[in-house]
Length: 105
Image 1 (cartoon, rainbow, N blue to C red):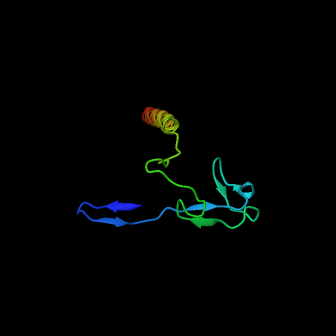
Image 2 (image 1 turned 120 degrees about the vertical axis):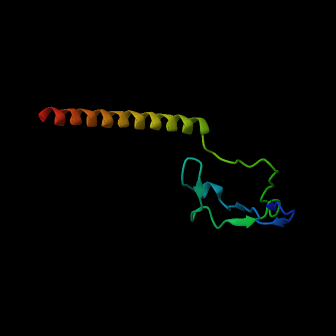
């Protein structure tokens, strides 16, 4: 990975590596689309792209995120509406308690 700075400098800042496993069927599932090394998978063979059968990477082809943005926005809107509804209940209850306390005087 190359960093392009505002002062015109260009520097190599990181190297992306890929791992091959002797037995990919031996990887352990660690999430919906995540896997991790196990004793059955063997030791990962880490190489730079294009070296040692590690495959290649094309510029602009990597995922930026695997988050479902539409689903996250829907969840955020639902949470906001629930918060507003709960706030309304609290303020209504507060008003009722205030009216009750004022009626005793």
